[in-house]
Image (tube, rainbow, N blue to C red; front, side, top):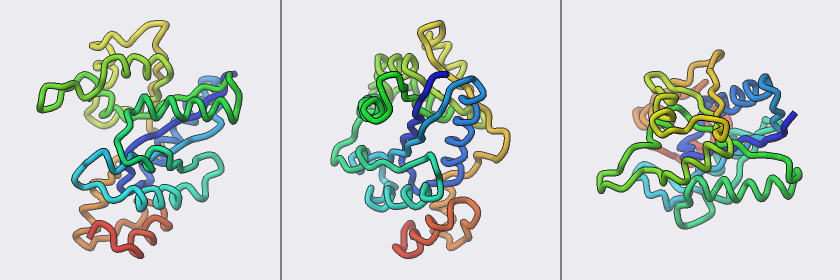
Length: 218
């Protein structure tokens, strides 16, 4: 049985039960496939990502820390968000790959967890004509280990086929959300908070408490 660590990167602005459920679903699916999951890592993106709605990484990391405090296998990591500049997903994964091997041994792998909507951006272009993703980065991520949870309306398999990311050198695991809806989104939570509506049962109480204490998203 192979041992792996699951890495989830994102804005986590704020973190939700949807993010946590993705990690739980990924762990269950991989272990059913005979792959032992040692740890889950949630890595918030740095402020250098430059998204207009992004609040400071200090707050986002604190919320991820609060969201994972009751988990016995998922942890928050600040390496990425502590940097002033944006770091590519591949470089974030390489950092954690080195750390994982130092802590658990050279035979332990690291898989990147993404939603199907993210996979569908693998072949897309920015407004200036540059690719959203570097093709070589996508190939390395898919070869190293991708765990994909399709979202409603997304077809990640089709995108992977178009890019030719199939075959024995590609390590992609499709997982299904069979327990809880992943319709909960950070965007909807931010909108609800701004409109002074309840977000109870969409994110851990510790996160809600932090948001209220710091008057975030108002």
